Length: 212
Image (cartoon, rainbow, N blue to C red; front, side, top):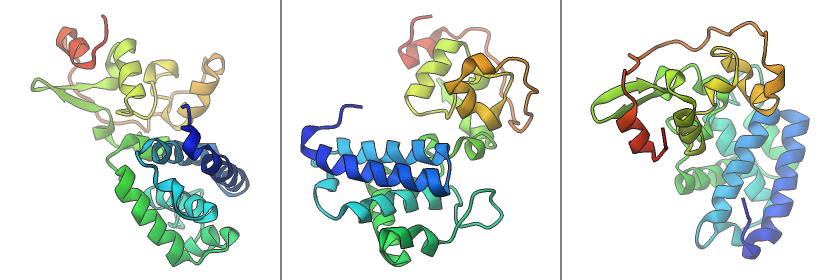
């Protein structure tokens, strides 16, 4: 994304803080989601980033994505407390939480938006893949590649299933970045649920604005 010049001075230090934190404490999937959220805030007119402190925005973004993905749940593989997240930014957990709530309202951060959910969580939900068009429910995992690509770029689905071994969902972000390494891996069956595959995708192509 091209960052508007008016907010570039805020974007750079916030992005740097987010990258450093994710690489030290979280993982690359968190980094992708947090930077996506930062870009979303940059694109708003006027951008809310023009007011407030850099460290507060960085902590708020991390907190918003973290809480939306159960980061504070000890049962998760990657987890931490709210205090542990806020402390490196010199903030109280309540301050980070308040900023996160503001960000969530501005950018509609919730569990139903695939672009704000970690792939390994989103892929466990069948509704992530089902789309209703003209009264027809389709499973985008079985849709033709152009439709999967369009849905992915629109933020409807978290990965492009055709780019990875059959429903290799858990490691999809890695194989999207390195598709040449995706051959010969054992399929992951964590993606469950299915919808009837239609015989004719023509109206679905039209709905997504894609050439068949």
